[in-house]
Image (cartoon, rainbow, N blue to C red):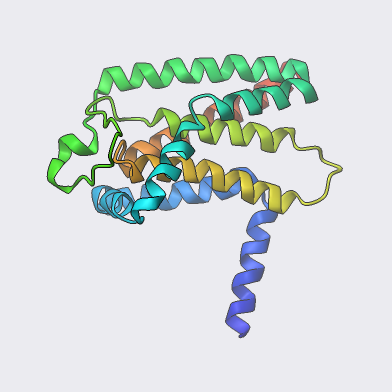
Length: 213
């Protein structure tokens, strides 16, 4: 009972540190797993982890990172502070170009090219074969949810729950890419890390240049 209370307190304190701490901690675990050689084992686990009725859920959940998350995050950012919103829109565009450039330059294989026999194929889902690293969907998920965390008004209560919700969407986006066998763990970690770097750089530069507070 005492240990259970300690775990609850630990998680509660983690939530207080905010979105960047939660997602950064998740990425640290992911990179550690990659370094220990669990890149593909974890990817195959994610791909085979869900019952078939979850397939459509993850297909649509992953699709959110193509447009919906972008529209929602940038709209909220522009409404709360139009200068910051426009500045972050530019950064998100630069991030997208950077991801595309790295994908083309490295041209890393996707899971189906690494071992097609282990890929669980989902009906009516087109699986890509190359340009895996980094994951663009994951980058969008981490960036847009981080932007919403930055825009969350300081006077409002419930920050812990909001940060947890946003972090779960970001991490869930990355997990969905492995579930759908579109990316491996290292691709997801790469996309998430790149997004947090862009977001932190953009936010701090915005403050330094007096674009926003």
